Length: 310
Ligand code: PYC
Image (cartoon, rainbow, N blue to C red; front, side):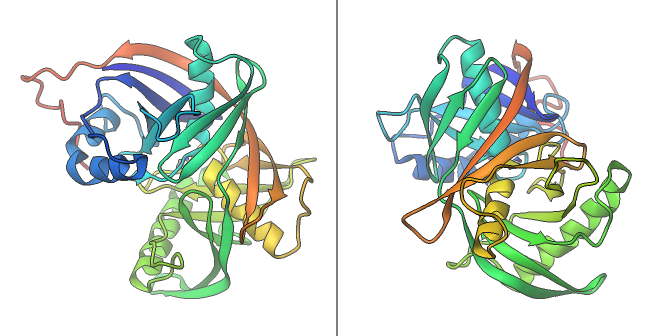
């Protein structure tokens, strides 16, 4: 299996160029569903240690539904197939440029949740225009046994987010363990209390949001992903969901650019345009760096060829 690894603001992406499972000829959404339901062993083996690393997301290149797209892609982490992934789309753009498959300028990418565009600004910088994102519930309170009531917004940015602002815990690297533990409890409470999308979609990510102490930076976040690890980048789909909430509450006008930083200090530039539908069209710009190009080997006699199960 031929892979290229990059990181976007510290968050790893593994692009699989060939060697994935046969997902048939259904729509991209159907192929993603088949990957989620019938190929769990495959996606765990590529992402769990020893071949993978915590937090890593795979971008599996597949045929697009839409022939006008440069490629189709299915994103997944060690625990779930994702609708979209912002940091991995930036990593994908830089990887395709590294391979000489795209030049500077705009390319369309097909994902299971819709078409996104990447605009390659230089060898490391990509601007992503995401799918329409929306805030579906404002200031909803859930109950948790450990932390009492917690209030947040439910929003969609390609994945489903519960966004708590201001964060009850200081968003600094020293608190990553405490932030992770609290976010897991909150996600479980959202699922148990059926807080999610309009059609019952479960919350799969939790965001703690706060002001940044750094000049010129609008805000800082901590994002919990489905694999119970945190996003080292400011999370592209999470930033999209948050932009939708800022727009819905009149806190950010269309076209105004802000800087969002992650808990480890990596940054995206964010803005949005209004859309015809209920939400907004987010735009995020970030940087990725190639780390390695390799072939993964899964020998029959390797006791950990399926990854170290957690
Ligand atoms: O950047 O959208 C994102 C993302 C989702 C999960 C990890 N990163």
